[in-house]
Structure formats: C-alpha cells, structure tokens
Length: 228
Length: 213
Image 1 (cartoon, rainbow over the protein chains, first blue to last red):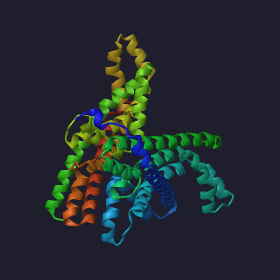
Image 2: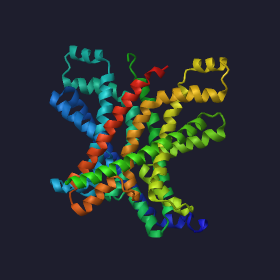
Image 3: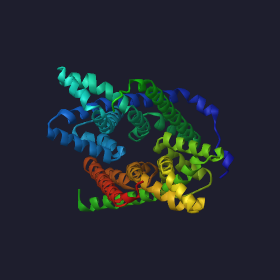
Image 4: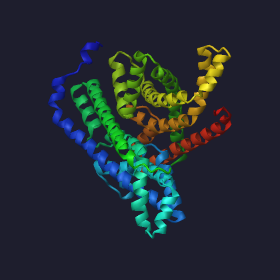
C-alpha cells in the first residue's frame, strides 16, 4: 500500500465538517464541565460525611471510594449504561455519561478533599469552635477556604484526568469529539488524519487546562497561611 | 452465572494481567530512556523528550490506541491488534514513568555520586550501580501506582478488539443478556488484582526500605 496515497491531510474534508466538529467539541466540554462539577460536589459531600458522619457511614463510603478507584471507568460505565436498565435505571447516553463521570470522579475528589481537611491546622478549627461557630460555619468559613488552595494542584490534575475520560464516553455512544471524529474518519476513509486531528484537540485542551491551573495556583498562593 | 462463565472471565483476567505486565515493563525501559533524554543538557534530546511526555500525557489513551491501531497498517506494519494495544499502553505508561523517574534521578543524593567519583567509578558505572538502583527504589511506590493505573486502563484495549477481561464480559453479555452480573464480576476481578498489586507493592517497599537515602 502506498504511503502517500493514504496518509494525507485533506483540509477541504475537515472544513466541510467543521460545524459537526464544533458541536461535538461542545458536547465534550459540556460533559466534562458538568461531570467535573458533579464530581467535585459529590466528592465534597462524601468527604464531609466521612469526617463528621457516624462510623458505619464512613465505612460504607470508604468501600465506595475503594471500589470506584479500583475498577476501570469503562466497566463502571458499562454497568451503568447496559446494566442500569435491568436494575430499573434507564438513562440516555449523555445523562448516563454525566452520572458515570460524577460518581467516578467523586471517589477521587473525596480523597483529595479528605487530605485537604486533614492539612488544615487543628488550631484554626479549635479557634472556630471556641468563638462559637457552628459546624456548618466551621466547614464553610474555615475548612473550605483554607483547603481550596491546598487541594488546587491535585484538583486540576483530576480535572485533566476527567477531561481525558470523556473520550471513553464515546464507547457508550455519547456523540462527543472522539465518536464524531472517528465517524467522520469512517465516512471518508480518512482514519489517520482524523485521529491525529482528534489527538491535537485533546492535547490543546489539556495544555490549556494545566496552564489555567498554574495561573490559578499562582493567584491563590498569596492566601497561603503561614502555619502549615 | 455458571462456574464455566466465571472461568472464562478469570482466564480473560489473566490475559489482562499479561498485557498490562508486558506494557509496564516495556514502558519502564522506554521511560528510562525518555527521562535520561529529558535530563540531558543537549536540547536535541531534551526537547523531543518533553514533547513525547506532554503528548502521551495530554491525549486520552483511547485516542492513542485508536491512532496506533489505525496508523500501523497505513505505514506498512501489519500486526495483530494485541501488539498495537501493547504498543499504545507502553508508550502511554512510558510518558508517566519518565516523569516519575525524572523525579527519582533528581533526588539521588549528591554525596553518593561524589563518593563514587572519589572511589574512581566511571560515569557509566555510577549510572548502573548508583543512580539506577537508587532512583528505582525511590520511585517504586509510583511504579506500583502506575501498574494499577495501567491495569485499569488496559480495559480500553477492548475497543480495538483485544479479547481481554472487559471485551470478554462484553462478548458474553451479547449472548447471555446478564450485564449486571457480568460487568460486576469483571469489576470485582479488576479490583482483586489491584488489591493484590497494592499489597505486593507495600511488601516490596518494606523489604527494600534499606535503600532509602
């Protein structure tokens, strides 16, 4: 098979498909950001419940975290999307993807936040208790703000991991970048060009994300408290 | 689920372990070379190494696998899909391991290298007898971590048609219609292997702890 005949980058082909590609990019960003918000929120709740909840709850949530961190995301997604209907949970591809990403990411985020809580100096929490702050106030006004800066690097890292995991959603037919661009590749028999383009998209997105993370860290660094 | 079906899943799980194990070892060797290139003062080595690490860490593994699987035949290399899968997994883990090893090499205590200089070891001997063993011990925890990540990531090679654990569960599901049981069983097998890996990792760290400087 001749090399030049098949490995060529067809700009006209890509241009004719641009609206479709941008729509798919939108779905990738949509599932990523919503999944990220869901994972953060759920992970925060899990971390708080494990810190302040009763012991059986802590053990149960610990089991959830271990199970979801110890199994592949793809298996979790299959269980949810193909197994869900047998357990009375029929979801379309995008909601299933969002739920899957959130539950998967929350397991990791809860561990990040748990570490963050533990790194907040005990004295700060005790001082809050002494001046009569309620538990919610201690969480909202002491733990959360002080922790945010500590957990930022790990959270940015996790956000990038989730961005890459959105590609896996293509396997359960979420019409995001990977599925759409592979489909264009099949349609025009131009797999390799399309996959290179796809890789460039993700490479750009992850580089932008880690660049934003570095800026955020630099800006938040001035809030770093002296006593570690 | 009958014992025969479960037996098929266990067999596929062993295949998953083999694919991941081979990829980890190849990835470690490539990662060694990449981290050496990255630490090199020669920019002709350092810059390609940085691009390599950035690319393979910045692009989803699924996309890398699809790319390699489709690219190899086009450039005239016709190999079974499992080879493409191992190449993809190895390159991806090599990028992560190179970063870990870079940290390990950077934390080899200077005093040891000065002592080696004094004792008249050549630079190559220093590399082989001091830098590599110490960096290896320092990076062992992250190596175990990486092995666990790759084991989980290996489920993605099901997409390019390699019949490992995930694909086996999928194939069985198409004829048995028992997704809950099959995927739970597959997940459990992944979980057990990961626990075993983590346990072995802690044991190895305890055993080689004397190497910590």
